[in-house]
Image (cartoon, rainbow, N blue to C red; front, top):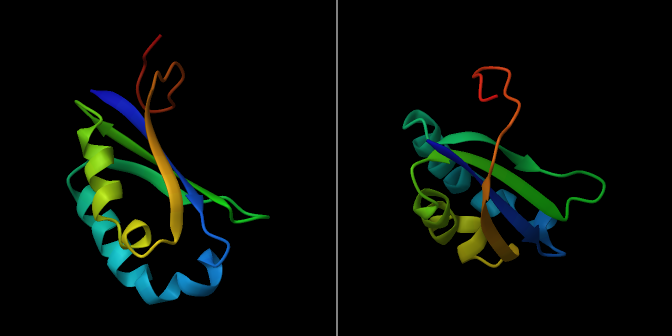
Length: 97
């Protein structure tokens, strides 16, 4: 299994508008968590201009599919996003070194 980092750049109105889509966004996230695919996720603070979600999967398609189906992306609360493979070296739960 590999790790993938999905990063979001949020729109200026992200905090003001996210409540409209938060339930649907969290439902999607919960589906991925229950499947063991989404490990961590959240928005950065001060300012809330970026978010980071970490996926564990065979390919980056899992993270890409999440972004494409995320209500925050679909409703333009995310102005750009990217997925990159993350080569984890230190992990408190698994030994990779």
